[in-house]
Length: 206
Image (cartoon, rainbow, N blue to C red):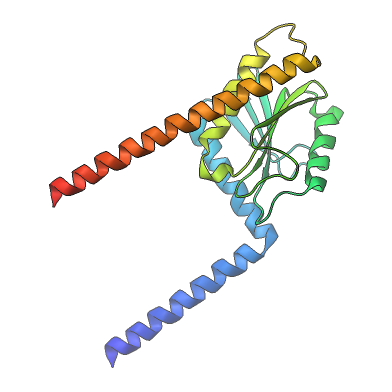
């Protein structure tokens, strides 16, 4: 009877915890806060030298501003259960065009768990002389934002580069696709290598 009572109590506690989690996932405000906290932590881990400013409560400044030496990037972060809609992209564009963001050199629009309406993963644009990247499902691989930063820095170092030229812009878009494809290949190989050797270690322990 004591074991049964203990089991029933554990079931009740687990059920209550699941209800809390489900309620949090259904609440868009809380879900957004969870996504912002996760992204903030990852940005600080991936860029230990950078200053990461939380700007989500400042209208028109995105969710974070990243500063590293002379490099300044805005991060717009979405944690939705479905693809990010066009209205959010239009709002992002308005922020990019705002004079309040003239200090920004580049920006990323990331969706943590889903895609972004009418945008390919790692789609590259130039708007108001600012470099922009759209990144899908960032939570599956946060290192993609490191690739974005490296790509931005390479372009920003090219003095006199005319990114209004459609041919040049197209070349950089193609280059970005190749970089991402090669990175994914390398990651797949490393994941396979890690799994194979982990399995070998487990077999030896047995």
